[in-house]
Structure formats: C-alpha cells, structure tokens
Length: 133
Image (tube, rainbow, N blue to C red; front, side, top):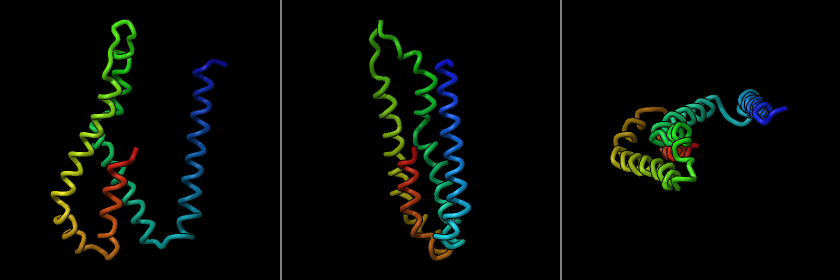
C-alpha cells in the first residue's frame, strides 16, 4: 500500500471519528447538559466564530497551500515564507481587535434589545473568532 493510500485511509478514519464524536455531543450530551436556549447560543457563537476566523486569517491558510511549491527551493535559499504565514494572521488579529474595540458599544447596545443571555456571548464570540483554527 502506497504512502498516499495509507494517509488517505488514516485521514478518512480521523474524519469519521470526528463526525461520530460531534453527533454524540449534539444528540446525547448537549440535551443533557444544556437548555434549548443554551444549545442555540452555543451553535450560534461557534458558527459566527468559524465564519469570522476565515476572514481574520486574511487567507493565510490558502496562501500556505497554494504557494508552498514556490518557496520550497533549497538552491535559491528562500526565506520568509514562515514569517509571512505567521505575520498575516497576526495583522488580521490586530485589525479585528481594533474593530471590536471601536464598535463594542454599538454591538452591546444591539444585544441589550435581545434575550438576556446574548450580551454575555460577546466576549466568547470575540475570543473564539480571534483564535479559531
């Protein structure tokens, strides 16, 4: 069996295990531990954080995959690829942190009109969005 086949099988097994764990959490653990409103709140925060993290990384993940071949050249001794991949999300993080700090009052005013638990999610929304992989 080739290396690609072995890695594909391992990746598929890991993905299936992840789906099973997610289904187990959603179907069994969430209803036992959380109320219906809290389940909706958790799903909402996770969805927003996932979408936000895609924008905040400024495309560093796609850039790493697409242009790795150009930088993988020992003959020309190219440096700076790792720095670029680390600095780009850091810039996105700083920009988003600035936006969060500038518009925090408006967002809180909007959330005051919503159900009682929503204002508490602002901090978690920011934390997850700024640190989601």
